[in-house]
Image (cartoon, rainbow, N blue to C red; front, top):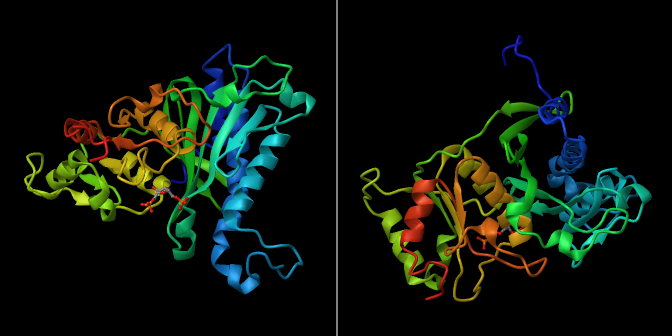
Length: 341
Ligand code: AHG
């Protein structure tokens, strides 16, 4: 790294961003910093994941006599604990909890925002040391201040999001988040324990060459989805050869690549799952908000994901997301790809 380059930390960046808006109170920025803090603590634990068997199996006690927790449970509890202590969060909803949680402290009931998260997405990848991540999103609450938050605060469509993003625990740890003004990425500098701006103003390439889907499920896909996959595997018009296929099976990792290199990530409906697998409020909406802020496109096969009005906290949603050219191409096969054959 150029030693003369000024290091901009996440904290400094969010403060500078707030100053661009004279009416901003700094609460949203503070919340982003709190999420960053929780994820730094989770990261420390993720880095020790391979040692679980050495230190003691889950459910057992470790050498310090502390109970070992599964990483996703640990991540969930850490986010809840940090956000409960934050002056800027009225409550949370987590993929790990059946119901939302309202924080009862005096400062919480007067907080403007609620946070939704998938604390450890792709957790089946932990055992094979592949990238995993935390996905988060922030809504301004619609319930009155001074009272506990309500279900309605968490069932807002993605087009009402104030900010959303993810932390990827990969070969390096990065936090990428979007507000309506753009997408920025911060790499954790372990020696100082700070997220530092490394990827300013991220844009999803308009044209991609990579498709990302669990192709093992092809027999269950609709005829439209199968036809699009055939197109991806042919010598297509765009590049005169087939597209490349990449699939990690951890949405954060597959989306991080899609954001940087372009392409399409899909988790369509199939014969066994009429709405796909991924959750609207914890995975599809935050990623759709982020990819749109980066110039990309996100659809459920028939409509913009951000315009779907959620009816349940844990509802699922098919997703086609990424570079404009590839998502539009996939949707052109939508007889529809979202419809089960
Ligand atoms: P989990 O957190 O249970 O491992 O689920 C991961 C999610 C998402 O991150 C990924 O894109 C998708 O499930 C992978 O599902 P398949 O294994 O069905 O492809």
